[in-house]
Image (cartoon, rainbow, N blue to C red; front, side):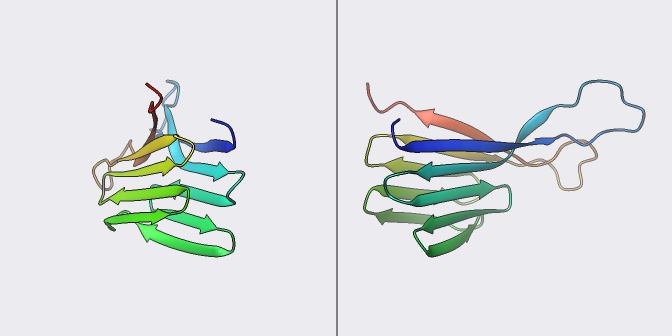
Length: 119
């Protein structure tokens, strides 16, 4: 999609002592930027940050929100997902995958999906 950039930061699964197997990696942080509207969205396993110009809003995964503004719709489904729709037809879904608290090997991570609205 023209005018939209996305990027991600990988995190590794926790390692066991003396483990020689390859370490699994997952998305721990995702960013979506619209070039023409000066909107930045940063999503981590802890929170969701929306920056529109100089205005910055921080949401929690405990929030349940539908935010509509010109060119962008942001829907947060409590402890589940974030859906971002843009006026150019791009729709992104970020899913929060949660593991057991204090799990010895795994940690929470994000799934990143693009919805095809051009069919």
